[in-house]
Length: 66
Image (cartoon, rainbow, N blue to C red; front, side):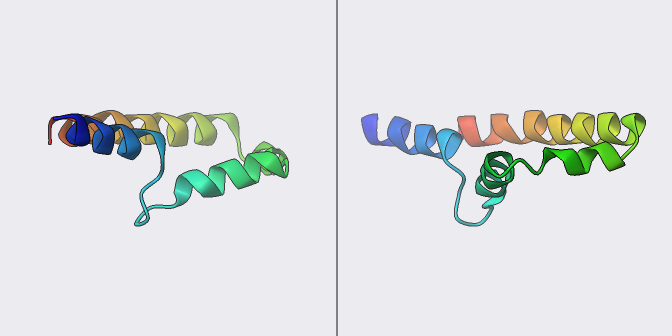
């Protein structure tokens, strides 16, 4: 039981090897690449972030209950 919990916690806290996008975001934030987003209009950014949030919300229950 404890091992299963630790495995789920690792999946939540660290990006999985198949999807290293979390590391990419951390790197982009560390080198201050956020100014690039200013070239996109506000509705584009809002829609993109809402879409990402929905993908995350829909995807997490399956991993938590697995």
